[in-house]
Length: 287
Image (cartoon, rainbow, N blue to C red; front, side):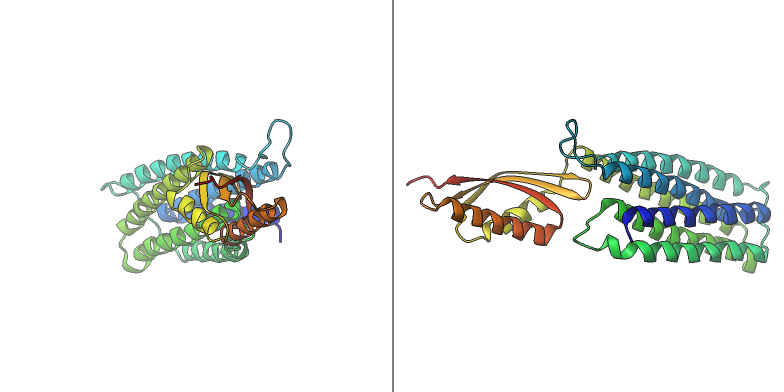
């Protein structure tokens, strides 16, 4: 199954949750269920953005975008992160209002559990269809990682909603519904900050120093390479672009130099997945 097909399925699945949880949450007056429906609404928008940006990112390089269009995915991530912070702030405010003495409490009807367990089933479905691609090193798709972790986050938030509604339904602890929504809103803020951080890092070409060190180690493992200099690394979507300069014995032939660079590229792609490696070979300075 291709990325676009997975994102389409995930979008339609999470859209059904909005209808089911939104309707039932309104009927039983459960803020935890309505909060989870709001989270589902955000995820539906996110899936739609990811679908559109992924389709645009798959366009081949052109005269104005020599590295391709994959960074559009990161722009979508920034938009999604900002929207999630706004949603979490609204949920937090509503939860605080529910904790006031004059607040209207949740109506713990059995139909509320129907909404929650339906959502859990959808979350498991979304996790299942995205899990394989997420951990496939040959694919290394940021879009699918975002989709997978959103589905995982949805599963966790639905569990929180289940706990909150269950406390109200079984123990008549009505404040549990609001407290569950407070926890969910804080969790959403945490997720959104991580999403913003990751998107900003890619847009600004930030890479972990550990990644550069690991690349140098893979380069120096090739016999015949004496030094690795001027290493540059940037991520564009699911592709890591690497540029570096190596020194090798001056007496080697052009074919031998080509074989060395081929081994370096093989070492790098084997470890880091989809990469575009550019290597400049210089002769070793005479002592």
